[in-house]
Image (cartoon, rainbow, N blue to C red; front, side, top):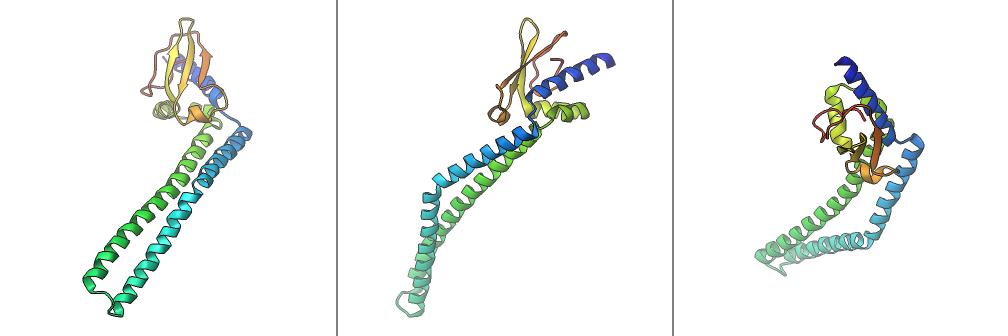
Length: 190
């Protein structure tokens, strides 16, 4: 059993070496990801500028309504009705601006973290316990397909599929049998 586990772990580490990227590849891919997000943000800059302009317009309108009320030009009910409308508009704009910022920052950070995990993921896999190996398999793969000639193909999970410079299918050879894994057990030898 111990020898089988050692053989399995060695095979798995070999598979993880096949999907690992170097620091140089990490830096290049991280730059590409950041550039793509910046390009997306730039393409949305007109909409963001319009939202910001509408926010300023609503704030100015609110100030004018308040000044009109203090000058006895409008009654309290009218002021409240317009202030409620303005508050709802400002809340919507603030939500949309925050959502855009969070989406940009969160997604960019998530992809950067995923890229960082790919750097030397074989060492990560080799040095962790069985639970950690299961977690690695859940994070990195959508399963493994075994051909009749015992060639294993790892199906990388998102976002690794989009991030790895090589094909999303990583093939590893084996001298022992494998079973399909969907993140429930450590990878069997590949």
